[in-house]
Every structure is written in C-alpha cells, then in structure tokens.
Image (cartoon, rainbow, N blue to C red):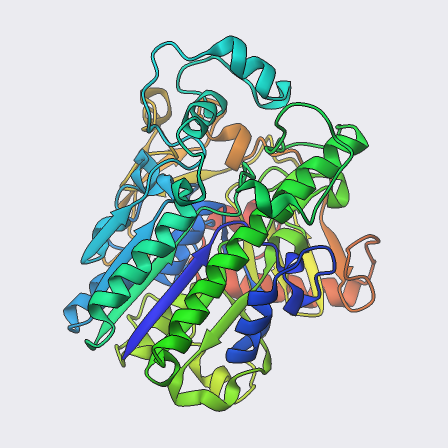
Length: 505
C-alpha cells in the first residue's frame, strides 16, 4: 500500500465549491470530489492546530486533559506504528508549530521530514534593524509591531524574503512532495504527508490570485484578522475576506498539481489519497473573526474530508453521510496497511464507510481545553459550558509541561501534584497542574476565552447557520447523556464532569 495525506490548515468547508461555495473558485477541489468520496459530516476533535494534530497522530481526543502541547511519552503515534510494521513515513511541512516548544515531539515520529521556512511568525530571517518606517507605511495598524519575538514583526520580516511564487512556503511544500514521489512512487509501503500552513492567517498569496476577488479597500496591507469581535470597517472586512479567498485559490492550484501528478502516473490504481484540514475559520460569521476564543460554531467545527482508496474505486464521486472526526484519521491510516489499532485509540477507521455508506458513531464531542464541551450527532449542535469559565475546577494532565512557545512557568508548576495513571497512559502517572491566570495560555486556549453564549442547542437541519438556538429539554437530555458517554469513553477526569454539571457514568 502507498498513501498520500494532504493536510491544509484552517480550510473552510464553505470555501470549497464541492461543498457549496459560491464566492471562491476551487475548480481543482471539484476535480478532487470526482476522484474521491466526500465526507459530508466530518468534524474537528481538539482545537486548535497542535491539539488537532495530536488527535490525528494518536487517535484520541486531547482537549479533555490538557491544552496545546507535545506528544506525551505514552501516546500511540501512527508513524511509529507504521515503522514497526515496515511502512516508511515522510513528512513535508511548513507548519512551524512543529518546531515550537509545544510541538517538538511530532515530526520526529516520522522516518524522515522536511521543514519549509517562512510561514507567519516563524523565527526565520534575522534582521537586527528592520526598515520600520517603510514597514509602518506598508502594513495596517492592526498587524504592525516593532516588538521582538512578536508575530507581526516576524511576519513583516519574513515577507521581505517571499516575493516570487516559488518563494511561497506552500508552493515549496508541494514541490518537495513531487520530489519524494519522483524518487519513491514505484516503491511500496510508504506514507507521505504533505502539510501546509495555508490558508491559515495571515492571508498572503501571489498577487495573481487576488484578480478574482476585487475590493474597494485602498489602505495598507491588511491580511491578518484579529481573534476578536468584528469591529473593522466594511471595506476592511471585505479586504480580509478577499485575501482569504485568494489564499484558498492558491491551495486549490496546489491541489490541482497533486491531481495532475496522480493522473500522469496512474497513481489512482495503487495509491490512497486523503485530503483534509484541522479546523475551519470564522470570517465574520456570528460577528467573530478566527477561532479558539469564541464558541466552536459550524464554520470552525464542520470541516472537509476527501478519501480515495484504490480498492474502493467505485466510491469516486460519492458523498458519505457517516459522522466522523479528526481522531478517525489515525485509525484509517493504520487500517490502510492492515496495522492493528492499539487499545487506547478511540478513533474509528473510515474504510468501512468508504466501502459502504454506513454509520460509524452516534455522536462526536469536540472543543478547546477549558471552554465548552461541544457535541454533534449530525442533526443537532450542542455547546455545554461551565457556569463561569473564569471560575472553575480545571487541571492540565501532562508529562510534557510546555505551551505553544514556552515551558510551563515555575509559578504554574509550584502547585502541581502527581495524579494516578489514566487507563490510556499505560500505567504512567501524570503531573496534575492547576490551570490558573498565571498560565500564558489562559487568554488564548483556556478559561480566558471570550465567551458570548451559555449552554445552547441548535437544530442544524432547520438552522444550519446557527442563528437561533432552540429549547427542547428532551433533545438536550439525550445529547447530554451522549456527551457523558463519550467523555467517559475518553476517560475524562472527574472534575471535567463536575464543571459541566454532568453525572459521570
């Protein structure tokens, strides 16, 4: 077996024509839909970027036990399991979070890996005295900073070295992917992951991709929305959305290059292709930009997935109704190669649903550490919040105490205790660290979220835009019971049930 996994970041389901997009041109994703089975009810698990990748690599939800962090010593990693079974894995990525403190254990699981530099705030090019006066005129005040180790200053400097199309990190990622295939496509038993940060913000793409998305905006560069309420002028909002559309168009072109390569070398007959993302992105819907600090609406939670398996060629051009989520990718990858799924894995292989459109699960839970626990059964969407996100019993369970780009502080760790092993930690006890405002993650991926709703229920059949909550005690009780069962199956700690006022099973 051979497999190619193409992973985008922040790719909105509603930005793709096969999923009904009207404002973005994605002809190559339309081509992809004709070659694959599209999953109509695919959802996130843990959020955002690296928690999602931990779910994908381990087949378990992580948001119930900790926030952003590395793989843990007890985690099952699909590239390691592949290596033990004689399958070669290779990662190509420009997703620089793999090289932060909170991601440094992921890429090392693959047999080999390549890192393409320059995305977002990647600490890439050194410029001791940047041309601040020129840069101040070039960039909107929303995304300008002269501070060191600041995301905006790093981005402005990186852009000084990304001018031609071939300079763009995503373009380089796919080029490296084709280099791998040129050398290895005739071999057997390999897994290639081509992963790009695009279309994650900032929304920077070659100029020609903006031609289809004109705006009336005439100000400085504005391609990085805040993680906040929409407060920008209408022309500024239009500019941000247009830059996202242009970046999706760049992703679509790269996807087309993969399809062309498969066509040219007749790889559909012997190579699996899986294409997905980690989560979506709010572009002003619900009066919000971005993700993480607000409820996990459908624009963030409901994501695209395309799957081709050469042994199920008849599935090409079909749509699968099975409810799935990102944890299922790990189990699917293992199943491609006939590798047994470890007992700790909660994800389910999608291959049975590929062969025949059948149900896989009754419901799926997902969320951001410290915020609501969310659930969908495909019909309803249910957000269950603690009474007060700023005053709740919350702990991080870890043996790898790092955040996104920093270690846990001594102040955080001073109150840590040793907790007994969970059933999935293979007998290993864990540090139990109180989540407090001392944590650098408190305002981004923890209890300091910008909550704008309490526990709420939506009927996605009659209200797919989640504009009007419903009140149905029987439905809520049924979904709360399903949430309790799924949290129990994932061995959520006792306080996770108490904070949500659920009775542990």
